[in-house]
Amino acid sequence: MQHLYRRGFDLGPVPTPVATESTTRVDAISNWQKGLPTKLKGVCSHLISTHENQISDTEKFVLAILDGNSAEEMLDQPPYVNRLKNTFESMGAAYNEGDDQEVETVMFDALSTQGIDAKDLWMKVSWLSFHDEDASIRFRFSFGVDLEEDVAADPVRQKAAANLAEAVFPESRIVTDNNALLETLRTLLNDDHPEFVERILYFNAPNGGAYLHHDLERGHAGVVYAQISGSTLWLALPQQQLVSQISEFIRDHTLPDSLSEQAKQELRALCQDKNLLSDQLNSFTHDALIQLINETEEFIQYMITQGHSQILEAGDVILLPQQEVKTCCWHSVFCLGEEIGQALSFAIR
Image (cartoon, rainbow, N blue to C red; front, side, top):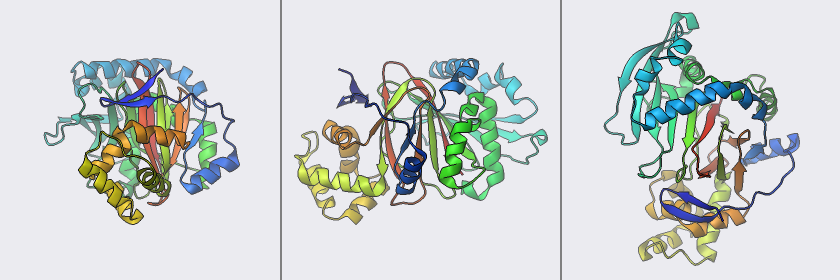
């Protein structure tokens, strides 16, 4: 039986996929308003086949990064130099010694032929974790001072950074040119022109994936995540529901032996006050809580039995509302199978 492994932790068996009917328009709207995830099965399948060459190029690019090659140097060679020609100028690369997850940041200016005056754009290459056996990596596109600037305040540079992502990785159009997906988003957002910003290209590797988190950011309605190759398992639910599930688990179950007695005491105290539990969840700093919800088989399997898991195969999309604190959709990701898988994750503005 296949198991969920992430960052050295065996988190129990992978659930058998349940056959579900296609998500209806009414269900998608209801899910979005409640902060629930919506899976759109196979909505990208027809476009993946038209981008096979670009997807193959990207896989080779990632393997070269994993072999220690420089992203900046590779972007100065075909096919990337041709994709960037007359649109973006590389301004060199940097490495933040204070960020152990960063591999390399390549900086760009948009050229005048873009019709946009935008500088200090970048592609940041980072590991997803510190675990030695997790080769998961991401390519994130944005601008300015990372984590300090209000990106929603500068839509011009946001648009330019999105264009940069599409120039480097043209398979981004699997999302941006997807008429069926766009029609769904127009309905959910009541907006004829949704835009995809703060773009990330993910490669989730065996033993890798993301811990429970949200992507709440001013000016963004949510996230669209498209599985391009490989497969992933997701736990996804709105914050209010997550807080209730954590509280119920702590109250009604024997806490895992992998937790220390001190950690167990801290968790029992937390579940007495849902507001405090919510605050500690949002802090991302409570060690006992992080361990419980991300690193114990008992909690992961409990969440699966409660119906919060989704399995994405190549061609599938999951929509994650991220508009309000109480209803933003928290999510956790696990790589399935033995191969590293490619995915696109774009914020929706």
